[in-house]
Length: 114
Image (cartoon, rainbow, N blue to C red; front, top):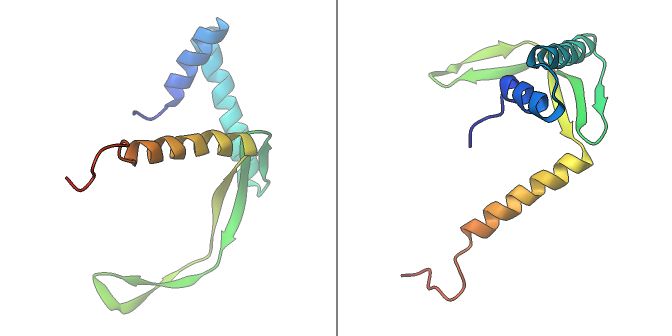
């Protein structure tokens, strides 16, 4: 299954609403720009029924180079964006994991050892 791209979103929304694709693209891009701007100022972004984007600070730590494990590599502290899915998204994604589990389960009446 291919990834959903910004272009795919523009086409879908344009087809559903009848809006011109360029107008849809402008709205999507401005939305993403505002989200990025808020996060770059350390503000959390909460989108009800979708999820929450938060900036978390990672502490400085010591890493190891797998090619030269005898040398420590200092990793500086940094800010990273974390996403926590909302209730509605979680329930929809959980259905996917159930579908995958059902497909992995052998059909009843068959002998998996054969």
